[in-house]
Length: 283
Image (cartoon, rainbow, N blue to C red; front, top):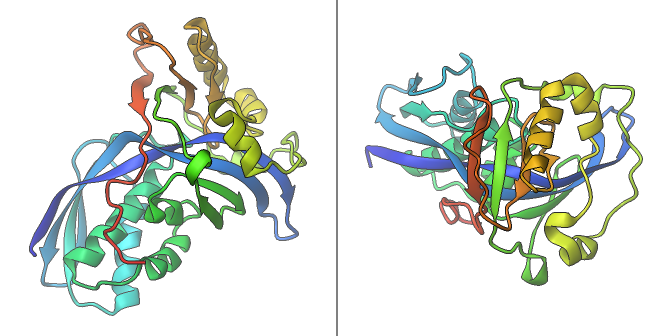
């Protein structure tokens, strides 16, 4: 195998996000449901025999040492391989949105290079590598919508009545972004939400819970409030995903999204039952 082209890296939405405490080491304890959507980056991989790992930005310029490159180097080091790769990244998922774009790119790089380099490492080993890159990477490697808790390290796939009905969502990324650290370090952040149950979530799905980060995020980034109000004006019930600044709303009926401010990124997205690369690494 010399190349892998058009390899997808889907974004995610946090259907709710509760902060239930904070550990002595500063890490926050959370509960959330992560849902895959069809807003995707696309990556291309060409084999290099000289061991070098290079990247080409095919759309939005990325930082010099982004998660895609870091994932490739981490996998190469862990496997002790001599092969390299040239990686093309067509970035569509916006940064600083709370949609997991960088983590998804890293997971896709691990899965694709594991195959391109013929390493055949099991998914559990890829997860160990991925966790060193970011807390969300193992979720994308597992490839299923999931109940997530702890510090993001406890991941349970949604099954049977917990599974998400197929739906469409309006997803809006305002021009401004948000730094995750600025939210989690804020004194006003609510850190004592009661623990939820997965059965409680399954009874309500898209109407369940709230995002505890949203009040602080709205104070730090007024555009979030504007985006929420714009969706509400369409008759939609909206909330923020992750640590923002993207917001979303289920669309039970067709909605015209064409009149959004030109600087915003707005899409009608569908949820995914499984990651497009499910099965690329053995359990």
